[in-house]
Image (cartoon, rainbow over all chains, first blue to last red):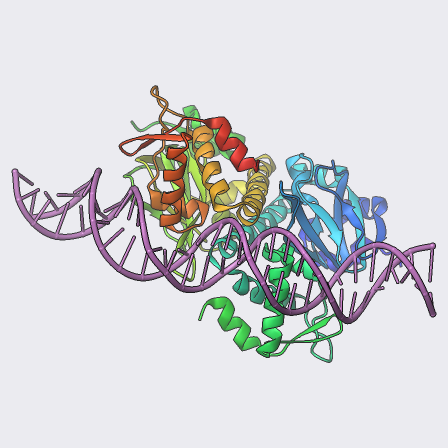
Length: 229
Length: 229
DNA sequence: ATTAAAAATTGATAAATATCATGTTTTTTA
DNA sequence: TAAAAAACATGATATTTATCAATTTTTAAT
């Protein structure tokens, strides 16, 4: 199960691909692979991180607790993404909590290797910068959606997002099943409101369910709703 | 009025301070200083930028048009900040429009200089990366505020923000006066709702006005409201 | 200085969303 | 497998916020 970073495909999707052979070797020698069960935390808001986590498998929610006690999910991160990078780069405590929403396998990489490579390998630094620039744009988009779209539109978008990013199984059900509470925390709404909207979507034939699994039955309708027709 | 980057104090506040003497000289030789009147655009969403803008004076709103035709202000940028950097780094079209909310003086720096320095000077790249990491954290915070606080709380926060970041004049009025519409676009609400809340704050003695100028009369009350008491 | 246009304001009303209460179903645990 | 806990669901209601309409005030243009 343990494998070398040098031969890890996951790496190709993130900034680690800009590391040199030697740098990668050091990372590989010091990395620790961990299994994290659904529901378990990887790190918590406010902690000081000693490294970053490269996701080999599974999906994590990155969220922030607000003053009123609600958790806002800021981002979902999955295979190939590196989390904790922002706080290591900025030399600050993490501003988000990371909790597994499915069983995960992650590689912990001590920050020394990241920091020293940042200082010496401009290709790597630039690669990290590009990823961060991308994340920043996404954050802007999320903000605009949040402030300008209705809850119903945001719920519709959330399901489309889940389909586009994590796909569906052979029977057409979404691969990633989030609890109603998690969906509410992505969308930024009360759980009951979220549930009501899901019920409405089911009645209208936009969604179908089987147990906990959800299936997008009318993608076009959801899209039109999300875009605002 | 024209001056050399090498001796510009503004530079100390942004990533340009990590440039070497020679790099800075090239930048200084090719930069163009521009004056932008209140209300005029610096660049528009979707454009391809040929460089970045370093703000010497004045304040700009960075906003994004949503599908329903409303402008969401994502950030206010002022003296010392470099705008357009994200899109130059990511080699993408700008995702935000920049419009002056007060008279401005900016220096346009052709992107070649930024890009080549990014490739060769890891200190500079790291400095840009740190700034971007900071912006990303701020974006997360804004998102959480937006989704978890009421409009009233967000309006209160907006005024506190204006005071903390741009200060007040000798008579206690905010240095930066935004139109009601701009405030609404920061807060993400309808203009009428925003005006009603400002009226309420005036009645309660939290704010005072004189013509267009606004004065924070009871900062503690606004803070408590914003924090949620 | 006069007129036109834009910005600010207020009221009335409708629509969206949250909250509270309660019941059901599903999952977990002893 | 029974009991407890957690997740899901729905109704009733309150609260928040948006929308529409009309008016006043301020700013800009001729």
